[in-house]
Length: 259
Image (cartoon, rainbow, N blue to C red; front, side):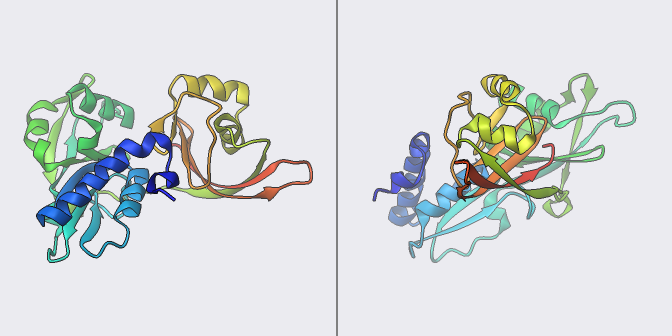
């Protein structure tokens, strides 16, 4: 069985990229640091590197519970530390008594500056505190250019990784029955929203599967997939546990709150 058979077709370009990273480490005896990867990409990197004794692998995104992390592939002789991940952390200072800033606003401002999503990690929010983890190579640019969010003036205060907020998510296990593993069907059961309302949300790019926007409601969902619905939360398909007497599939989900 080919390595590609374990993953979705659209993931093949990324698999090829990881194979190139692996070859660089093995043939040139030097480390390779990735941009920030989402959890699905981290899973792919882990699978591709496998148990190769010549290539070691570590992830770091600033704090233990963050989602987006940089991968470091390195030769066996190397003993990396946190500085090798080249991370920069910031807390935003803004007039929080008069202005409320939310995740989409901060994310939109970063991307409007021409910063690729892969160059910054999690945006951490707790109350009126907002923190950003970024790749060290763009730190200077951000400090100069990221001066406002909407109409609010913003100052980026450099902080230690040790001072990062720890994300807190509340999740629950949910057992549902579905007629099929279509994306719209699973989302409808996960968030108790009718399929007629789910479909336009998917088509309007409000839904992601494994952190990638999907606009086709009929996409087939598999065990291990993570689905997110903007404004509602996300769910992971933990397992498909069989067929009921009425011919429906029994599916176990883990659902987290609004993200």
